[in-house]
Image (tube, rainbow, N blue to C red):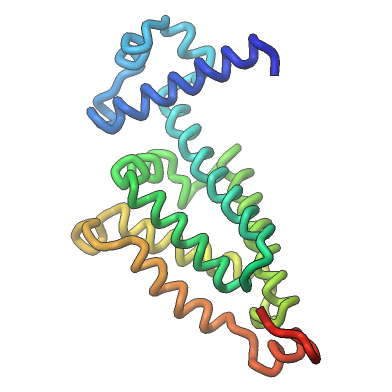
Length: 216
């Protein structure tokens, strides 16, 4: 990346950082583009060179969240120290920790971008990439004899994502009254039940391990 590109990337990050701080402090509706540019001491023309609308900021944050998830699944795919069910649990803990660390902002982005219900454009593209990663993870579990093989890996990935969207959506909207409870606990309870249903029969696990091999 050349110096010009680095400066443009730095300016874009500065706009996003400033916008996020103002959204957290004032709320999305109460924050104007003028507030962002005044704090950064840039012109509105400069702002619009990077983001055509205020909504575009929210979409950028939503894309970053999906890219975080994609990178997390990729890291789990590269692991060889534990089985797939444990790696899926690890993913859930990572997501819960991320959301719990900044709940109001995550709720704001999820609601404004509609990333959980009406993903379009780049959001849809990233969501499909995430599904592909999930599918690979479940397919590996099937090859290892850890995940039942009588269902398509993509179908299992869709079920897991559905669980995540429902629980995160209920938590974000305050469906159960508030968000004071542990999101991680809710995720992990659901994953225990889901993974129990996904588990391959013991006979399949033994065959996958093979004679003289220890199942991971």
